[in-house]
Length: 434
Ligand code: GDP
Image 1 (tube, rainbow, N blue to C red):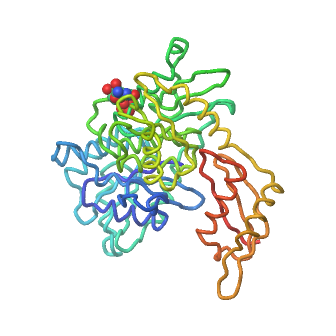
Image 2 (cartoon, rainbow, N blue to C red):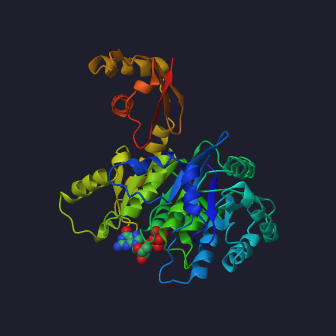
Image 3 (cartoon, rainbow, N blue to C red):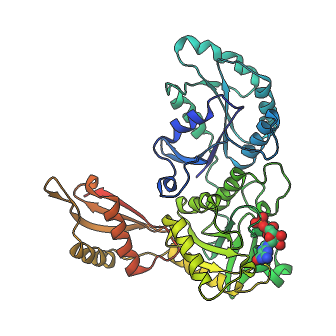
């Protein structure tokens, strides 16, 4: 999915527009119990395009209260990570110094920029947009966050600027692995540990995403590539430690990966930020493994691992399918357990079940626990078929899709998993009218 960032100085109405674009299609994980409602990103849809939207609005720069500095960091962030930038200004206020500051940064970006002039609440204000031509980003699109007007034309322009589909960079036999997690969880250390003495024969290759450097390697006849190793090694930028930065960087890497290693700091435990990062892997339909790192620092007895696993299950209710691996990147203890699990989940992510086999399982499931009824009518399941892999996606043909409850869908998913595994991969079930 392309990434669209909304950039602008505070108070121009970025969050309002973000909400309008994302609507009720908020990231699924946010509806899960125990997950914060902070909106870091959402999914937008326009014409036939799906895209991720990021409201850079509330970005916090640690120890920095200066407005301009924060605007600058925010814009830098968006420039680096997004595919298209919506530059938002305030039609009522006109061009301010902060707008010019942002504009200057955006000028240097080699990314498409669409200029949105917000607060054009009625036709009489339409003339207010003209002064914004002087910013030099072409046609200003007049919009109104409060009335929702003008968004169609704006989104036409945004979608029209999406990059052409990037070519597949690696063959089908290569497992693409992304390491994600908050700063200092040990991502770079784990990459080094995995590569170990193979380092010498490893050469970094530039990915098609600007700034991304991937690291290919081979082990026991299996080819892998670690996606965006450069992103992990980057240090010292002002936004490095902000949550949005790591989420955005992770999003980019995840998009290009098959398997996401979600790193958790075993020493410090799970924090909210881990959920955002993990949630994106889930949303993006990638295979996932929880890797509890720094296990060398944990005082343990025979119950510790089980207890920590339970904590992970409690915190990540939406990802019960993901296996958990405990290790230490530093001492390399238990490191050998990791790659076999990576291979396993990659296989399961690409698993395809024949329709007749799938339907045997569905029939059994329906016989044990019949579908729900509504006003005397019963949901009838005709048949199911797996339409795609990565992630496995199954369409269930029914008499009335409205009658399919979330809980029954869950039940079917559990039965399918019990029969076929699908370990480490999210699954998608859709109901369609027969
Ligand atoms: P990144 O920001 O996620 O890439 O994290 P780094 O790989 O830079 O690691 C952050 C810090 O944690 C460094 O000081 C590492 O030496 C340390 N570290 C990483 N993995 C382990 C581990 O397994 N055990 C211990 N004790 N320290 C670790």
